[in-house]
Image 1 (cartoon, rainbow, N blue to C red):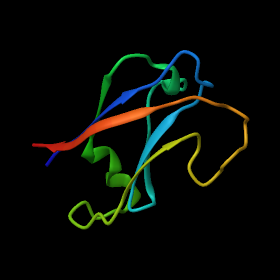
Image 2 (image 1 turned 30 degrees about the horizontal axis):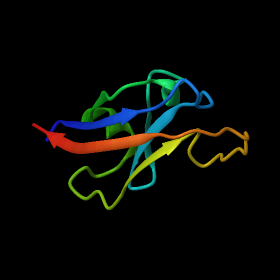
Image 3 (image 1 turned 180 degrees about the vertical axis):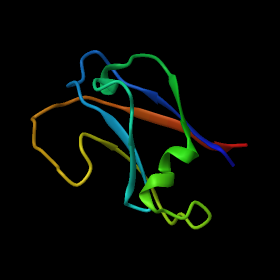
Image 4 (image 1 turned 120 degrees about the horizontal axis):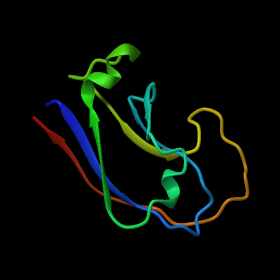
Length: 93
């Protein structure tokens, strides 16, 4: 496998924030758009798995995948509200 794909759908009414994917709780990749929560309509986010290589995670032994909003390990109560949808999380060759 070489790519992780997920579809996301936000709303312009959401508080602007970034979206991230973390593998095994340590390897974190952030979406290029710092206001990804406001992207409307179903949008595919494709992440090359080699981007996780510098974090020391063994890609043959991933025990969790986390999709988050904001900054991982630095939660901030911003008072933001909104709705995000995620679907079709897949691995591709």
